[in-house]
Image (cartoon, rainbow, N blue to C red):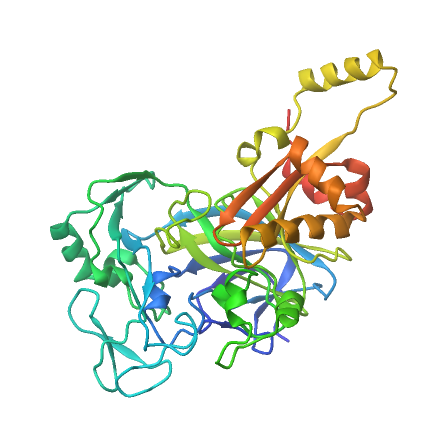
Length: 435
């Protein structure tokens, strides 16, 4: 094994498949740092058939001391967008150009090649061609979309006119700034311009962040909603529902609160954990209701810590305090004092000392995802689902990460319970500067 390092610079990517049998980078020291130049997600990989997973995430990193049954706490120290412009929009698959799943198994309708290499000829939605037979190979088109440029300060995005969009399309890699080892076709080549002059505030976050699943899965399908497409699929990555539930780590979340200064606690299902990231977005409202948002390249700095014997079924998010639901926010000194006076008036000796956390739940539908998050929390704390439901109702919230099936179940949990499951220290660290 290579020498253990304190800081790892990552600039290599997987071909769309997260495979636990493939070589990881590292090893990285427990407490070490990952600095990565990430490739845009979603649309670029979706129109690049040689990428078999719908995204282009970084090669996983082996973390020293991370064993199956542990967890890895990943703190996002910084996210910086490097793209000058990007394009996005809603999607529409084209029948006859894929085998069961247009994200995973693109098939050329001309020569029949599966996951063919491509060339770009011109601009527009027919510009991606099969390198073998020159057929239009795009498995998706954008029925309504936009091209967006960003200001130098990284605060504002503006959707461009037709003329400006076509200028960007003719020099896609320059404007999108993908890392040098990225192979995706730049989506700005499509030149969508249905929205013109729309202004959007930037708040970059990671749509993909997590640990390697214990079975080879397409990267965009490492979650309960997109992963459901693999159940009984007619291609090499088909799984049963039981296999999906056992092996996935829910690294594909599209939760807009996975941003700078947040911490994500991820299950370790393979030795070394295999931390990976990608699919950076410039901004997104809850739900990502269009199916896609402004995918960008960027520089990310992560710090990782191994949590021994913290066995999780899925990720737990510790958002920035300002991103917590109103009912889950930390109590002020004045609120605590009021609660203590109220307890005394009712002849109660004490009130709960609690901290917030968000369980990620995923499933084929939002209802299934909510049930999944509630059950994960109940299992970890050896509590009943109704108890978690009550806590989430009065001290938290259910929030949509991605439609159709990613949610966060957020609630306050007593400190003693957090200590019992060895999560208190990392949560206390996240919120140590609380009022």
